[in-house]
Amino acid sequence: MEPILTTVLPVFGMIVLGYGFTRAKIFDAAAGRGLSLFVFNLAIPALLFKTVATMGAQQGAPWELWIAFFGGLFITWVAAALVSRIVPSLNVSGGAAASMAAGFGNLALLGTPLALSHFGQQVAIPLGMILSIHAPILWFAAMLHRALFQTTGSVSITGTAKDLFKNLATNAIVLGLLAGSLWRFTGWGLHPVFGTMLDMLADASVPTALFALGVSLAGYSLKGSWSGMFALIGLKMLLMPALVFLMVRYVVSIPPLWGHVAVLFAAMPTGANAFLFSQRNNEAVAAVSGAIALGTALAAVSASILLYLMDTGAI
Image (tube, rainbow, N blue to C red; front, side, top):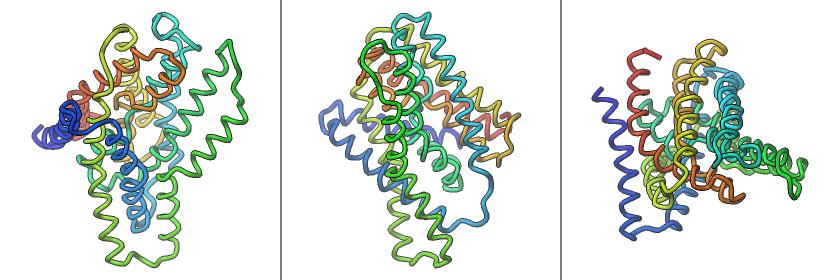
């Protein structure tokens, strides 16, 4: 259990540090956004570029990883839409906000640091494969879901699809993976100076992401809609990882570490994009905000248990 605590305590200690500095007004939301942009657009892409550019033979097929992760996510999405019908605070626009909150995990700012801290850079490839399409696809799904159920106004499906492809084409994580693949194909290798710079950026990704998450948490609250909040936490942090685990165990054939990344990512609490979607449409805002705040706190315990089960071979 000590190796687990060595991973988890520093991770959540950095989050608490970011939260505390923000509450003390040493940092503000703008600073947190700047740190998040650094992580998304530079640090993680640098890590993925170097990993792909210098890796050996491919270990597994990306589509099997995607089937396991997004298959479990899809079932959770549908379940959240059904649950929203019996939870008043979630029953808007066919449960689009609830489904987004139940499916969109905090992969970049929490899942990635946890995976890298515990498993090392050997899991950079599977986490990059999921990260690269996670946000664009879920935004597309949420907007399409809401468009099918809203009674006023209209949403262009064609325009939404164009936004999806635009987001994928300009996604720094996608570009990092593609650039690394092209560089690997040339067989040129990396100059030591360039390699060292990439290492410095990659090493900065974990602490910066965690501190940025702590800064962002200062903007969420636990006020109101407790039933909706607990429903979302249960769907996101219990149902989804259980479903992804079943997909990994019985449906696909991927390397064990890839499966661990998929399940760990599935168990992450609701991410900030779900709140942005909820806030933009003024739907289930209190429930989603609470799910992010309380879910992130609970993840200190749930992630410890999950990593322990992985390390002992129980899952």
